[in-house]
Length: 131
Image 1 (spheres, rainbow, N blue to C red):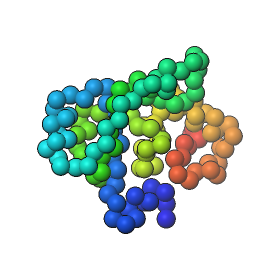
Image 2 (cartoon, one colour):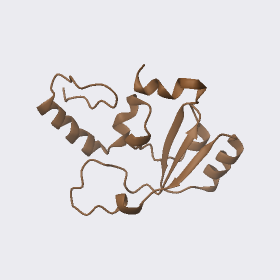
Image 3 (cartoon, rainbow, N blue to C red):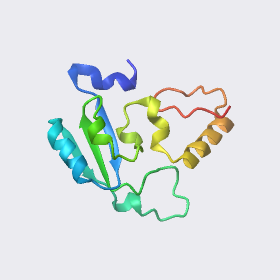
Image 4 (cartoon, helix red, strand yellow):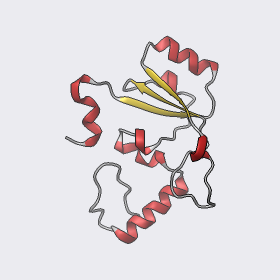
C-alpha cells in the first residue's frame, strides 16, 4: 500500500489540508454549513520567526491558520486558502510541490539533480530532479 493510501484504512475519510492568511466570515460560514469535521490550528510561533537569513526549505511560514478537513473535497471551505501545504499534513503526494515556495522547490530539485539524478529515491513525497 502506498503511503498516500493509508487514510483509506478503516474507512477513514481523506484529509484535506488548507492554509489561510485569514479566516473570513465566508470561510467560517462554509465550515459551519458543511457539517464536516474540521480542525483549525493557529499557525505561527517559532516557525514564523526563523533565526537565520536562510532557514532552509520550510515554506509558507507566514500562513496564520491551517485547517484539516475530514473530506476528500471541501471546495467551499478551501476557496480562500493560500494553496500552500505542509509536508507533515500532506497525504496527496501529487501535491508535494505545494509544500514549498517555487524558489525553494527549484532549489531542492537542483540538489536532487546533483545527488540523485536518476530519481532512485522517489517514494512518498518525491521531489524530482530537473530535466
